[in-house]
Length: 263
Length: 263
Image (cartoon, rainbow over all chains, first blue to last red; front, top):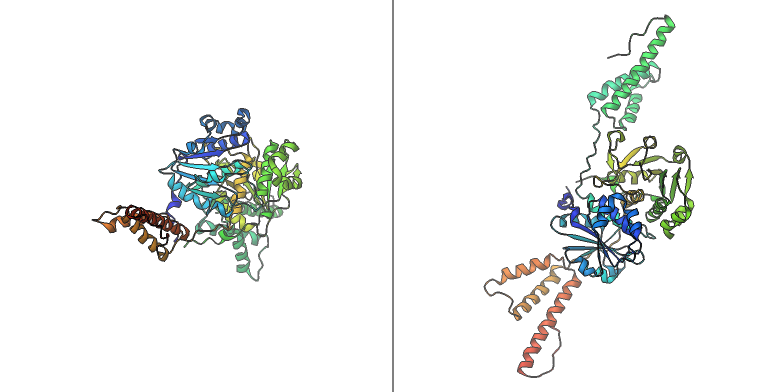
């Protein structure tokens, strides 16, 4: 049994802030605001932004990201911006020795989710040209990276999306209905009806019925049939058998149909 | 022990294709091309795109995404676009009963990585306004969703980023150097030197030396010290002790320093 106590902690996303340093393009600020909204982060902080074109930021933020844009704070000094935070995470694509990057965001996410319970966490993103400088990284408790291909250059707002997504996913239960498979009690009548149907159209080899039916059963088992799907197959078989019977009757005489029910 | 045989399979990203249906904005096509390049996907397919403004696509693709844009194919018919694929994955944000979404992209990723070994996989993304239609979903082997907050609306290119990232991460080993912790053999001389230093400045309570040193040891242990960091602490202690000794000597006489080495 794997023991991962932190993995089950749901992150408190409202304790995170995205801090963008010297961002060049207002579109990326807008996209980051939208990403914040998507993952429940309320605070976006800019340090020495190069262009705050309102129209371009709002277009990319879309309606979902507007509350984040409206609360956004702008600082000239990174240390001042980071003052209220208990933990600072740098992000980098470069993995030079000097950077001392020891973990991916996927590895760090469980710890960050745990820390977010009682601490405000700043997630730092550098600008589009050179990322975070060594001076920026000086302030970080840890530096994480996002795995990509070697020639990669993630857009800064795409990096924001992945980092927030990874932290958000910690301990999140997505309430997706998982299909209940049909029970043996539900399956076996279907297989008997199927065998009867295949026999009715002469599609069961006489020399090895069991082997043939095993092939059919393997084929259908692979589908992980639900009770509803079992009923669909049974309905199909009943209708087919009824039509075959009618056809036989019509060939003998011209009487009316007796109904489709069989069992 | 959890058995997850598929989890270790590294996806063959070159067997994936991103298929964007009725995309409205050329910027999103460009961003998706960049995401493809970042995660090793070479094929981008558009079905009935609404706007193929070359300049806007190229600006968002950046240099990394240009080869993907140049290979990009455009179809009018989804079925025709999907013809060569062995597995088709739909993506949706909506979780209505009708959609029959049973898994998140995180849950599906190990299976998709395994399927990508021998099959071409199409990843379908709907347009910015309404996503994939029921007619589009008709062609899908499975439909996945990305967990977000309830009021979320991921941008289509952000959805592409997350889906490709999740599949890319399967079985990827990121060669990050993990720090080797200092051994007990390396640690104990540091603690002895630290005790000597604290005593030299009268910072060890006489009534409970062991309890005090345990507190110090817990504090430093939490740092998971590396051998290099142990040497830094020792160097600091030696220099401090040497300066204390010099100061004492200077007060008695004015002799020259004897060097900083202690052990």
